[in-house]
Image 1 (cartoon, helix red, strand yellow):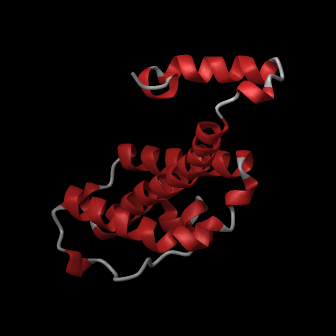
Image 2 (cartoon, rainbow, N blue to C red):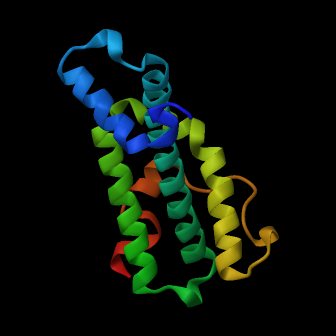
Length: 146
């Protein structure tokens, strides 16, 4: 039979929290705690990358399929911008990661835009046509006025 970490992750988290609260350091499952803390950091980066990808997809759709523009797209763009802003406020150390993740986020956004519009990849730019500042600003493409 495996360890509590392997058999009941939730119970393991509660046990580790209790051990931490009691300062019973010698009983902590440090190897798995380290692994989980590192995973939490990766999840924050992944969240930022995913939100940026969805934002890019909707900006591309807005620009390259104007006949499909809708309030739903506006709401998604606004929501993604707000979520990215909150994520960066809660995790300011992720700010420099934006530049690093932009190419990956663009690929994700491009794939999503192609999938949702049925437009060819050839229609869209090879590299992201928007700066980070533009993407996160309500001024881009006059979307807020739509």
